[in-house]
Length: 389
Ligand code: NAD
Image (tube, rainbow, N blue to C red; front, side, top):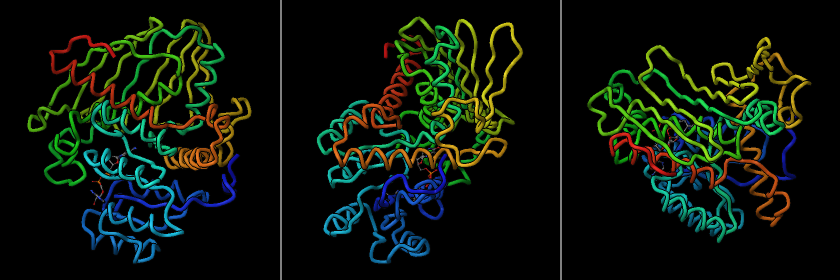
């Protein structure tokens, strides 16, 4: 149970790049990082517009002289201070992630980066190697992967309650962009422009979330090859897709599907993962995150509720309140940030034993997502053909 006591005996000095006052995702980063005192916000280059970013930082309580016009100035100035930041979160549009991550690691900072980590496997490899060289971590914010019931599913699958895994169905299919909303909305505009979002829209923006949730539930399975078909139903988005279907084959003979869509009219979020074994299935849906469906063939459906004593101890460890009360995206993110703090501290202490057995979405998780999107685009653009992963 998490009761507000810090994970460490101190708070990590923390800064942000992006996540300014008009951003979609900045607030949940701050809410998650600051919630249990594991981080303390001391600096930021919050906004592309330096003046607006400075005013915003000051309104958050950051010293005016530590609200910087850009990340280069921030990293240099903070490195020169005895009390400079130790970690930074990057919550900017996708095209900037690689360059800012690399600069942060080179400045000796731990990093929390938004997904997708970068655009190419080569870039992700470079970041992974740099983490080893600099002895720093990158945590990636696959938010709902921090929810307790994802870890309940992981334990049940590892215990063999489903038997050998045969099928994994994944989807993240909402309806909010069924029209060209990007003409009015700044946050959507860059998402459908390859200069900012890279080679894909919904595959990188949406599909990487359930893909990582499934990887967390069934860590042993590796995608061996895939076939992707992608569409631009709002024509002005081409060549970027607003809908995609992916078929996958895993190394144990299992198969999987992914549906990513921003044009699934009427759907609020539609993020679901269903894992089907030879004896039973598990299904989790982000619109009802506190319930995990456990369906044993030939028996009535069981709904496992978050916060209940019958769950595995790893699914109870991160509870902040008992069952019956809902915990959702903000709590899942807080769980991740708590884990990022523990991983940063253990890395600084060189505690390999702790890290060997400690789960969090790390730089390798980021790399896997980038490689998967890359292969999907390759497959789709070759006419929906099978490609090796
Ligand atoms: P947004 O356009 O709403 O906000 C981007 C923010 O970054 C703005 O404040 C902007 O001024 C600032 N910015 C842009 N370039 C900058 C730079 N070079 N230096 C400093 N600040 C800069 O975007 P968003 O929707 O908040 O998305 C940001 C990132 O978060 C994207 O990579 C997106 O994929 C990701 N995201 C992740 C989740 C999740 O669930 N993990 C959800 C939404 C968005």
